[in-house]
Length: 184
Image (tube, rainbow, N blue to C red; front, side, top):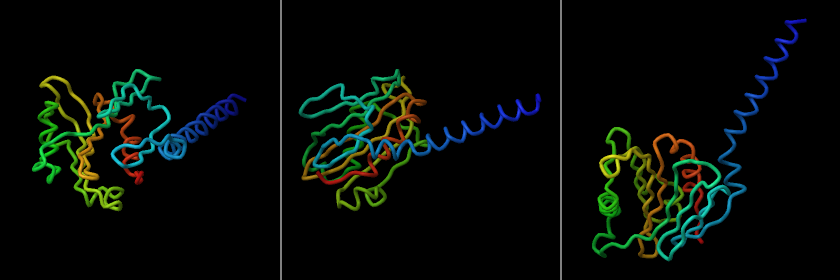
């Protein structure tokens, strides 16, 4: 009888773990299907329902997780820059990194050029994406995912910024959002 109870408990645990694995695997798709639309920079982004708008001005909108204590936020902003620098998104990124006092870890940074950001390439919108770990203000370790794009002659920056560990939690949802943009 002890073997039956032991095997039953083990079976229940394995079924539960399998269910949890499928739930986690499909979570980004559920967030995309159930998400809310957000228009920014002439594009339509699908945001997870749990991203709460915590700040809104003409030039910047910030979303955060208000249902948890995650050290994470997504910022959507229009970036003002000289006309001659608008021609090169790499220059925009460098200026932005200097303004924000960001020093990226060379071994942990991924840079995607416009042709590799499929959703933007398909819409014929120039974009640059930089993702990785960095130090801000010479003391704060962060995980940051920056998307810079030019649309209708203006420069826009969308970023996900968090502590190193919390970047793993919201990062997949941020990537899913970028991969599924539409024209507004």
